[in-house]
Length: 574
Image 1: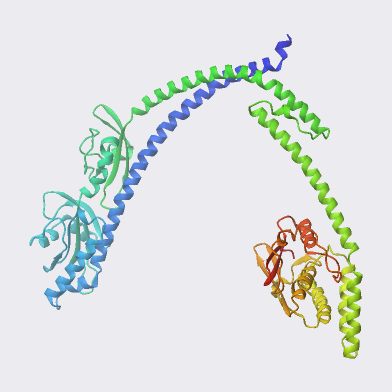
Image 2: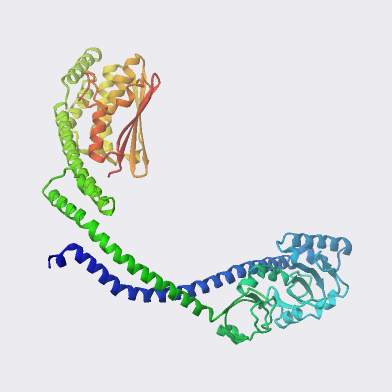
């Protein structure tokens, strides 16, 4: 009895019960679906054949319609067809123009006739497959296509249709367009284009034998060969109904009309062929059903044998995780299957959680250390001493006129530093703090450097971390300009880049040695004792990354002896 309640027995019984109950339903659904799919795909392929060939034929028709409209509306040809101009030169020029139009058409090789004529006997012809005759003018005036256009009052831009050639003896596809020239009355001049039907039948040759594709004329007669054994003419109701009984067989018809001429493109398939496909689909479904059932029996035993122990190990491991045990367990990865992969994922998850906890603890400690260091180094006594010394010398040299201005700058700096260094302030306020610092250092270094502010006014409203720019300018003065012993320039610029704000501090001083540059942002360096607050470049970089994320901070470029450029990236905050 114990075996009846085991996981192995339940897994086998459940698998077999599910397969037996679901397989039959699935097989019936699969059979119905595949049958419908076969019929649908067959119809889709037929429609695809028809649509593809329809587009190719309509493209030919469209090209030739454009061709005859060009000829009918051409001013030079119209003038040549009217009286009062030199006949020979005008007619020859018009004929050359007509030939040029014909050569520009992709289906030129299928054109039998391309001509322009008037009822009073003027005629020019392009070089087609049929030679011109003196009787062509009268034959066109007596043609069915001209009669059809006249019945419509020549209202349409052109008239198209399948009709007998003006030289008799064969069917052609013809286009007729009245001449649109002021000197020719409506119905007294025409452009006429005659195409052999092989322009359409040549496209059908690859498909006729295999797919029973054929072309029908306006009266339902066949314009191309058909291998299906259908009658020589199809009535409109047969095409609309889509079914036909011919030769003791049932046929399914599908057709699409062409854009002109009343022609239709058709495809015929046997209506009893899908029944044979359904029978083959049924056999295939039964084979799949039996094979699936046998595989299910085998897999049920394999699953019960191989999954029970790994599942138990995973269960025990998850219970240990719930008690904060994040140690690595190789046992749950022993199985070389999906369960082993799950065990590997569980181990990776536990190690990631453990690493994340350690990293979070380290980052928290690092942030605390930085904040403490910033608080401890807000005002460097040496900086305060040097500032006061500069004020004293100003009083001696200038008889005290500059003392008030320098004291004001110093007070502003001290007030801002006393408020802390982590607050976000508008860029405008940061630049005001920087101006106070520059004013003090300009007195101390006696025009040793020039500071240029190129930050666009529209960026001044964005917020940044306070005391970000001052350490960079300070670094530029002490380590860039001062070591050269010459006057230098420090430039501050800014720009927007997507959702970020970029500020750039650049000096033309001593530059940074190549061996120092890679470690500049990763290791704290000993600053000059005259530094205002001891906040170095690496410290600024860490503060920004702790505040905004790893994708923000500083980027340093430098060429020894030429320049140093520090770019600060912030997210745009208003």
